[in-house]
Amino acid sequence: MLTEQQVYDVLKGFEDPFLHKTLEETKGILEIKIKEEIQHVSVKVAIAKTGTSEQLQLQMAIVKALKGIGANTVGIRFGELPKETLDRFRDLLQEDNKNPLGSAKTEFIAIASGKGGVGKSTVSVNLAVALARLGKKVGLIDADIYGFSVPDMMGIMQRPVVRGERIIPVERFGVKVISMGFFVEDNAPVIWRGPMLGKMLNNFFHEVEWGNLDYLLLDLPPGTGDVALDIHSMLPRCNEIIVTTPHPTAAFVAARAGAMALRTEHNLLGVIENMAYFESKVTGEREYVFGRGGGEKLAEELRTEVLGQLPLQQPDWNEHDFAPSIYAEDHRLGKIYTEIAQKIVDKLKK
Image (cartoon, rainbow, N blue to C red):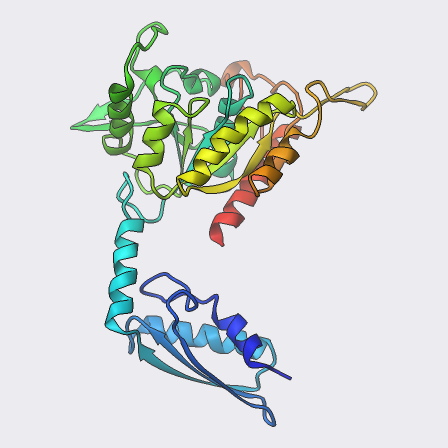
C-alpha cells in the first residue's frame, strides 16, 4: 500500500524544467493525496512556468514514476511558484552559470595533489583520454605553469594556431590541449610572479576556442599556491580529484589540497591512489613499494571515495604514434582509467 512519504520520495528528485533545481529545493511539492481503496494518487506541483511542453514532459515522467511504485491512476495539478521563489533561484542560476567558457553545460574537473611526484599529470592526461574514449568532448589545460609537462606526455609535437584573436588548441587522442609549454622556447624556465600566472590562466579560459565541451580538465600544480588559489576564485563551480600515493606522508600532504577544495566549496569527486602496488609479470605477486592504505585513509578523512587504484606499470610505447605517458585502451591501466572515467561521468550525472 502506497504512503505519502513514498510518493514524496519519488517527487522530490524531479527537477523544475526551468530552474533546474529539484522540487524539494524549490518547495514545489504542494499537496499529496492517496485514495487507498483504488490506489489513486493525486498531487499538486508548483513550477516556474505552466502551460508549456516542458510541463507536459514533466507530467508524463511523474505519472510513469508513480505508477512504477504501485499507483493505479495518477492525477496531477500544476501551479506556479511564487515570485520570491522564482527570483531567488533565478539569481542563484545566474551565479551558477557564470564560468570562464560562458557555458552552463561544461563540467570543470581540477586534478590536484599535495606534493609533486605522485603522478598527477599522468592521471590528468590519461583521464582526459579515457573520457574522450567514452565519446565525451574533452579539453585539458596544463595549469602547472611552472612545471608544464602535458605536451611531452601526450607526444604533442605541433603548436596551437591563432585565427583572428582566438587560439585554436592542439587536439590529440580526441582531447583539446593548451599548455604553457606551447608558448616557451627550448624548455625555457617560466620566471613569473603570481599576478602574471593568473593572467595566463585567464587567457587559457577566455582566448582559446574550446567549442562546446562536456568536460574541461585542469592539471593543477602541486600544493595550494597562487595557481590553485586563482583556479578556486575563477571557478566557483568546479569538481576536484585528489591524487596521492599509498605512502602515509603523501596522503597527509594531499589532505591539505583536499581541505582547500572543501573550504572553497568545490565538489570533491574522490581520491585516485597512484603507484598503489607493483605486480610481477612472472609470479603475479604484488609488492606494495610505497606502503598501503594512504588512499583509503585520505578518502575517509575528506569524506569521499577512492575512485581507483593504479599499479606501477609502463605504457606500451608506439614509435609511430609516440605518447610516452598514454596507456592504450586495452592496456591493463587503460582499462582502469576507463572505469574511473565512467564513475566520474555517472557521479556528475547525479
